[in-house]
Image (cartoon, rainbow, N blue to C red):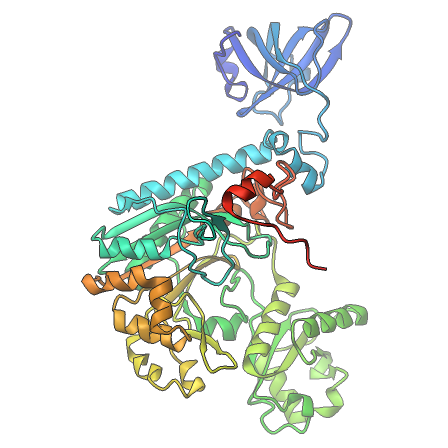
Length: 579
């Protein structure tokens, strides 16, 4: 094979007169008269035009080594859309390194291709400029994160991939043990417990670019396998952790965009819910929720006789048609609303709405004042208990106003002071809002002692915090419980008695006997961060070999059955599908 001297996309007019050898794939071939052909050769850096003898049997995606002299292209043939468009390789000789069958889709990305076909032939999809750039951006982001963590005196520690099952909200992927038939390992959903053990072990500042697995339904921002920046600090509080993580994500952002984010603001969870109807608010646009409960405190309209009434206003949105309004109402009901009230504002404060006749003049006036609604605006109202109201209006807000992921800039936000518990189950056990190793706020510890008062338990704040970017949750963290008695108290409240906690988390509880330092940490999804920084709506576009939304891998046909001999060796039997 002829040795490569240069990359296609790195040649320029400075190389005119040089004899070079470039290697790559045929992106395009064009005949020129009887004896010549123009071949656009592509490698990871770009494309360069080569002038070759047409007699060569060259087809699309053949792999070539081309040797020739760099020369200026004639003025009438220059391509200003191509970085190498002012030059070409002339007097070229060609060595065919590999032939190729016609690919199942165009590699130039000009034609939309079904995602399953792209993933089935991912090795071809990786040749596209889009995927090449995405994966190189991902590599640059990983490198920037590692540099940032090392500059902040963190040490990288690798934690096990085969662990005991300790469910963290999603199902575990489990691995049968050959040496211990009937027993199973689990693949880690996160390195949470091991990084806490690192703190007990005096590591002080730990980080890891960790691979994690969760058996959960897939979405645009979820895959079974994902990568996260995982970190933990001893003798630190949440503010110090957030400063470290802010530095790392700012370094990663700067390496891709060239701009460093401003200081990342913080917002309490309750404020985020009341203003945006979400604990991961997209703050690139308005349409904030407006409190209207007092406006309708004495209403005679039964639909508004609720503990909470809120609304959102769309400026100049009153021209929306009835069919669209009916569709929005149906969506609101599918999200859990009992109904959706819309009110259009006309000249002189006149309103048009199916429920206008049930509202008093004072209520209409109070509504328009509270929402600062003017002629041409439309208001959407929901009445119910607080949680369904903010949930529905939060989704409606996104439906009506959320811009594409690559518009409106990058708006990072820390959401802090999450509740410790999100609800109480039928047995009276509180349900954790984060994992059960999160430290409550010290001033709320007294509320934990009254487990017979669910309302009090739901007031307990945790020392937990999330990092949000453009409406995506990048990651979560918290100050951890480092005292055995508090950890067991939380377990007891969650219905995990001492025997069960010792069985599931005994290695952590035992470690706490020997002097655990106060510690706090965080983890954020690298797949999500990369997707947002490069402007992709789906993390599959920044993962080299992803699964489809159904969890299948068309490339390798996984998941698949295994041989009977393997099952015998593991002591397993496969039951027939349930009918």
